[in-house]
Image (cartoon, rainbow, N blue to C red; front, side):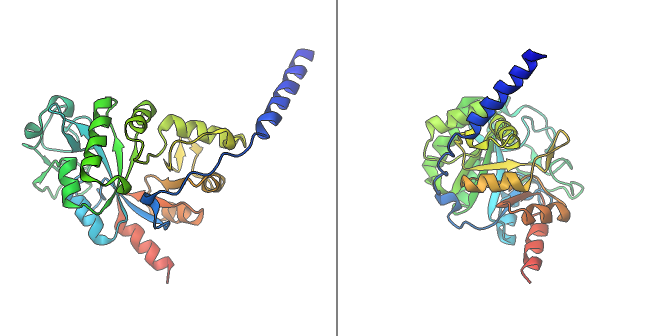
Length: 290
């Protein structure tokens, strides 16, 4: 019993010492968020309206008033970045195959919008090409992009860095990835391009915030994209949003498709909402201003 009491005392003292550590400096302001306003972020370009991760979706999202286009990228066998969510084309096109094992020409033999996983209205099938990221940048050169690196191959990160530099749009891009090691590699090779936090970084941050020790987290990212819940645990909470804002880190709620969730996120002060239905979010924001 004495051992456990001593252990509790030691842990309490340790917690007290950690709690007294100073707050880190807020993240610097970046051009990507120069407007400092709320962002309507079209998930995969707004896949509820047009087949996701296509140029057509991105154009539609811009036309209806979205602020940021969220997309995913994979690297083909001939080292070309294509805009696609899954590692294969099976779930979103009328074809089959792993993107990493296919050339661009092979992939573009098929078309998007054939399955509800990427387009709820897939019964209205359209002959939409799987686009390259370069083609999207060329089509919408002034747009802001939230780009998720899907592969764990660093060559994809290197290719993305080179493409952003080639198009001279480093102020218009935020790069993210679930794979934190990939994200850290991208930060090393492309330090001028801002990134969000990776999954393991967010997990660490959320745990520290629950312990009132979030000041111990040293952030390399300028934003976080978080769901309402994960594993039955509430993640998107007012306290976490407030903590992030003190650090000048933006909070985007992901992926919210019903009005009640959107309202909750807006009410607690998130900086953006990622949604398949940007038209619904835009209408909600317009009505709230009346």
